[in-house]
Length: 337
Image (cartoon, rainbow, N blue to C red; front, top):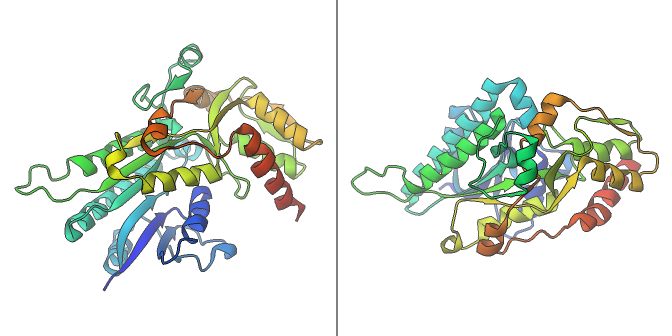
């Protein structure tokens, strides 16, 4: 008999580690994780971990034969900056692997006659405003506005949202008897900042990079100008959003893709908070105009009113609490050791 599990892909990444710690606290939960990399020593024992490639069809078939995937948190992705350098590989990792998992979830839903829940973290990169003037005019963007991404990562995320909606609503719609489809739910995250993991290739990573560099006494050159602004969220709220959406009654949901956010800051405002916390911080602004142009195509803020209405989303950390209670003390402690 197969073991019923929560399946987390990309589990050794920033969001994956934080999510795994939260889920492992729930009694009776069995968790299966997969990543190309091993889990850090402090995470051992929290899950059954597989080191492997999601594009390995034989590996996925073996996992399906051993485990019944009740919920899938699909976090694995090649992030925005790396995706621009390797767009074909990004498409394989971000789209083809997602498609394979959606097919597995659909087949599992049909086999057991009830939906597998598929939770997909999307990104602010799914948006694409054409210029700074437009960005300044449209201050808070809703889910269905400006879905014209200018990066491979953004294109991948937007397409996977659409694939998820297809598998959730229309898969095998011409069959004589339409079988149960998956329960696909997605959150569009702003820039994420973690106190416990180091950034790994995202275009919004200038914010956490400032913090981690200052805590180590290293100089940092910020690749966007001082006025550049996008929304952010700290990692505990990102995990809360995923778990809240997963637990929301399906009948309460009016859409399948939801914005979530916490606070919006310019790069200069982040610099000022970092310098106030780390007196020796050395932060310069040396814009990389190509990377900065990507940040400029993302909204200065996003409208998360649908999530607040449908599943009572609200961030636990506003900007003051994010820095004073979560980021600064934990990052100081991390590097003091």
